[in-house]
Length: 176
Image (cartoon, rainbow, N blue to C red):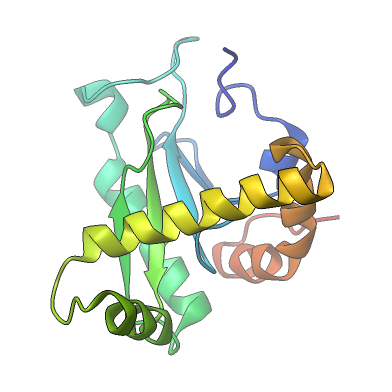
């Protein structure tokens, strides 16, 4: 399988809003997102190798890149978000990356009401966002015959306003 992060397709390039060559990290909006502002922070491949593990070379600059990107997310979506959660959700893309999920109070409140989890259990919340999105992808494919790649392209277009706002904050070149 070709790594979608090392061999960046154009729809990924269009979603990037942070790139730091010195630190070796880049960030982009997920498409389709699990929630508004869902960002992926990924390590650059080095020396022609796809970074797949927890090692000093892969993790170099991680702390600074994480702080940079969370600061941008908070600036872009505040005061509407409560915090930013981060996790590794899938194991199907081996390239080292993390998901950063803005915590929207109304979305969390509704989830807590429905599930009965009044305190904590935020990993279940992240899992529920992932399951909801996975279901929507499958439902769209079944009802409209759209491939995941087609949905990703359409999501990229729908996210262009958010991508532009994030790029303005980071100084990353605007979408053309």
